[in-house]
Structures are given as C-alpha cells and as structure tokens.
Length: 106
Image (cartoon, rainbow, N blue to C red):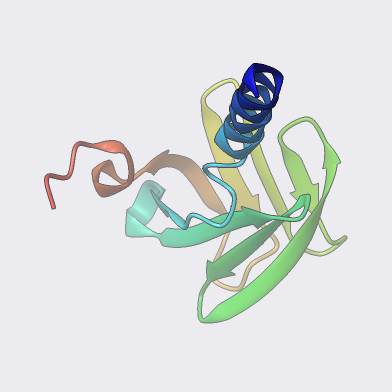
C-alpha cells in the first residue's frame, strides 16, 4: 500500500512539472509598437499565431526567437521585438502591454 501511495505521489509530481512547462502556450500576448501600432500573438504547437491589421498569420518557428511563414516574420531577441511583412507595417520597437504581465486581482 505504501509503495502505491509513493508511486502515485511521484506521478503527480511529474505531471505537475510537465504542465508548468506549457503555462504560456495558448495565452494571448498583446504588444504595442512604435507609432501606436499594436498586434497580438499566442504560441501553439511550435508556432506563433499573430493577429495584426485585421489578419491572422500562423508562423512556424525557424530559429531561436524567430517565427516566419516566408512572408511575415516575428522576431523577439535581446529585448527587441518586431513584426515585418504585415500590411501597414513594419511593427518595430514593440513592448508587451502592461495588462499581460502586471498583477490582476480579478
């Protein structure tokens, strides 16, 4: 009986570790860029889904912090975030909007 309890506890611990890895997957992140341009994205299944200028683009990951479908490219590296290839772009000098990361009591 004791072995079963220990085994169950170990499996729950492993499951918690796995789910903690993917907490941000699927969460929508909102960005504000230079010239009051904005876009949002979410990460899902190794790709970034970007919504900007009324269009949605699925961008597969092509490198560390780089997602692109050949026409649209999202880059996040060294504190510099940009989105190019979008109508009314480029979206440069982007920062996450405070509502995404700041404490929300409700």
